[in-house]
Amino acid sequence: MSDRPQTPSSEKSYGSSEISRRRFEHLTVLLIPLVYGAAAIATVIRYLMPYGKRRLPSLDVGPTTDFAGKGVKLFTFNDDDVFVLTTTDGIQAFKSKCPHLGCAISWGGENSKFGCPCHGMQWNRDGKYITGPENMDIVPQSFEIKDGHVILMDEPTSEA
Image 1 (cartoon, rainbow, N blue to C red):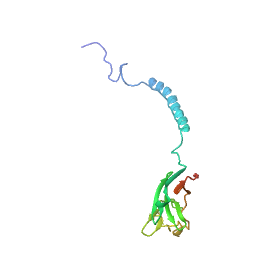
Image 2 (cartoon, one colour; image 1 turned 180 degrees about the horizontal axis):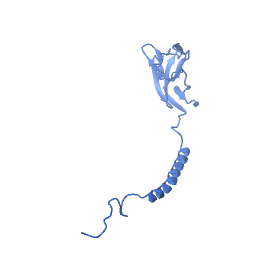
Image 3 (cartoon, rainbow, N blue to C red; image 1 turned 60 degrees about the vertical axis):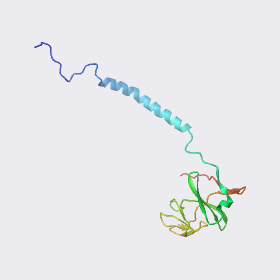
Image 4 (cartoon, helix red, strand yellow; image 1 turned 90 degrees about the vertical axis):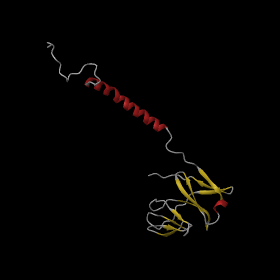
């Protein structure tokens, strides 16, 4: 038997991979300013970068002859869907959002009406109110006819 005292198994040697309390505090004191600094730099970079997609000032959707007849065409313009068609007043463009609750309007070709699936509103081909909870016409989209082409025009957005 040896006369050496045995060390308890709970003691660790200095070469251990375990982190000490002092080392943890030193790392914390170092990392907190680094994290705040990185967040500040990210905020400045995000502020200087352009926000979102760039809006197109206009979109040429084709010659006016493409809209002759009873057809209705749907186009995506600056994140909005727009119907373009020929009405009794000539070529018209309407936004595809219901003016009541903002649901997506669809075109029912067989009955020649626009309809809102959310609450049953309906409009005729000219965008005029037929039936539903609110007496509101479809919102028109700005456009112009230039050199025989229909050109949708960007409109300012109102964000509340």
